[in-house]
Length: 260
Image: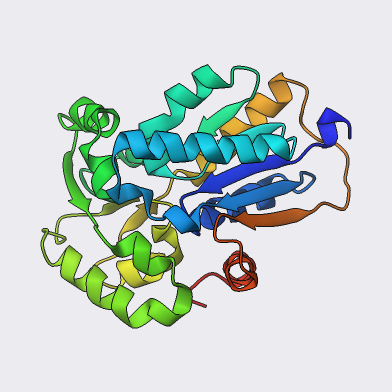
């Protein structure tokens, strides 16, 4: 296989990164993708940074065996906890990571922003440095959402419990002034409409997907790895919970999402 034709690896602690994959696949229609969900160890957002780094390294090793030409960390928590270490360990491999789209919301002029993310993402220095950078320009509320990613892992069957937890979580913060909503975990966009329904006014949602897609295209082009030709491509799913049911869930989420 020519390296130009090699697949792009995308991984997450579980199903959440499939929401990122959907954007990447739409924006790069000529590229092959392999998605790896570490669902056996999900969610990352309630583990320690050291644990997340170890798990992410194991996933990278698995994807390297598939001869990927680049890796997208489709997990805000793993990006915050492990990306620098992964880049240092694999200097030959382009590694990109999605991050909470706080800058995007601030640049859009939103003066009151609510960030929903995992407990670990919100506790890490990387995120708090972002908040410190922008809090002079806008009011930022950070909402840790323990248990939410874990429920989303279960797919559509867990929608009643998901709705109850979202209502409970958003009841702990002042939503009346928030007109910018940052979904700082790639699981959460699967229930974007459900979350928006908890607000009594329109709210603009920021996921970071457009930014990671542009960055991926730029890096591939820089390294002459961007597939220019129109071709029949493949999107393959892998999981640490390697069961037919889990892989079928990945495909279903990719095709239809949760709320459909």
